[in-house]
Structures are given as C-alpha cells and as structure tokens.
Image 1 (tube, one colour):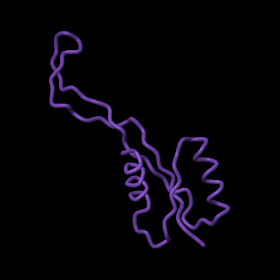
Image 2: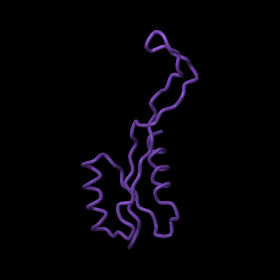
Image 3: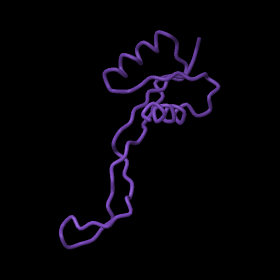
Image 4: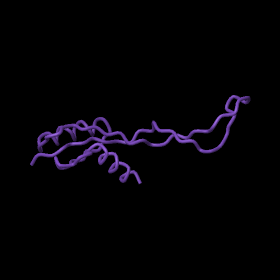
Length: 90
C-alpha cells in the first residue's frame, strides 16, 4: 500500500498576547506575551510504503515527532498532521 508519511510535533515557539500590560524594566509599559505550543509538521515521503514507514518511525523517535499516514488523495497532509498532533495534546 502506498501513502503519504507525515511527521508532526508541538514546539513552544508560539506567542499570544494576554491582554495585560507589564513593566519588565520598571519604566516602560508593554503588552504581556505568553508562550504557547505551536504545531510543526513535515512530509517525510509522498509515496511511502511499510519499509519507509519504519524508517520514519526510527527518525521520529530520535527527534521527538509523531508519525501519521494519509492516503495519497489527501489534499493537505501537513495541515492534517498539525490537526492530529493538536488533538493528541488536548
């Protein structure tokens, strides 16, 4: 069977405004930001098979990714990988 292999993980690289003003230097006011998890995904292989899936899993375990497979007909495999990793995190 041939499928698309996607690797995805959450990284704490996103920021969001909290709506509060703070003075970190004691003088100037600025909006407070909080760090939020941001989903990152990549296509490991577009036309993968079971052997490729095993290689992807080995790499994913080493780098902290989760592995997802999607049918070749999926139009947005990266978006779906991000969506699935966010669902797992909840």
